[in-house]
Length: 222
Ligand SMILES: O=C(CO)[C@H](O)[C@H](O)COP(=O)(O)O
Image (cartoon, rainbow, N blue to C red; front, side, top):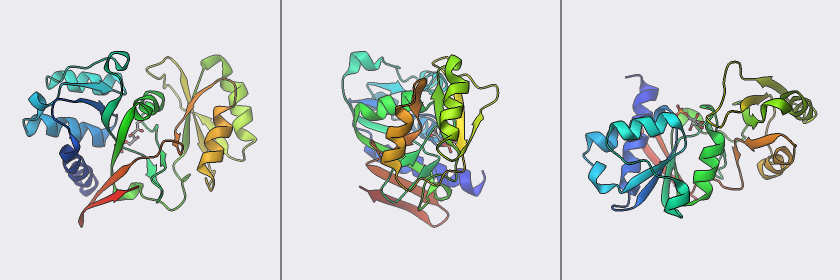
């Protein structure tokens, strides 16, 4: 396992402590979350979990494989805990997410959860968000229009080739914007017609960030 992968696994393992027995768990998407799901099985915690609401078809499949029932958010009500990774996190625990194209469902599950526990390796920590291209999920017929509107914001929008989201939409990645005011940019992009969701989690930041590294675990609480 690479040092980065080991750091992701350490963060994922620390997040197991946030699981509330008998509760429905929100589960995100990505390689760090895959460690989290695998660890639930390895540490024999499956029976503690009533079920999970998942942010992607990929995570749903992985959860089912270890025997965790995948539930419909419309049937569960508010979730106590949501565990997910991130592409970038700033000191206010605002995030860029969507590297795995699951941003819309991730934002929905995060919004419907009382506590968002973000798990990441240290490479994801930044002072200013925006080195990682900002993912925007877009209705396919609006992709050219939205691309032109995103260009006006000063960055370089690029269609993510060959990617269709679980919701049947496309992803435009906005490159080269240093995000000094995440709340304002989230609002601006949300208001572009044809945008389904922007992978900027400023209005709904993480509540806890668990960072794994070769030096160990760091937990930051908002
Ligand atoms: O937002 C995401 C998927 O849409 C992931 O949380 C993000 O891309 C981090 O992925 P990884 O854990 O593989 O580094």
